[in-house]
Image (tube, rainbow, N blue to C red; front, side):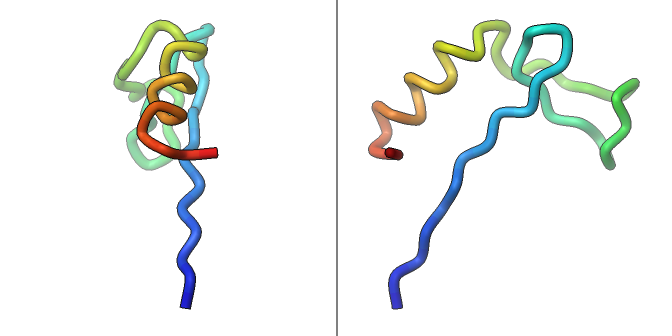
Length: 47
């Protein structure tokens, strides 16, 4: 069975974030540049 993984980029105020339990007030910024994050996923082999 083939498994497909879809990377996701959540955005808040133009930055890539992870929300704690979906709470917009509890966001951790992982990358301030969404384009760079998308390129990072591509470099890792995601299409």
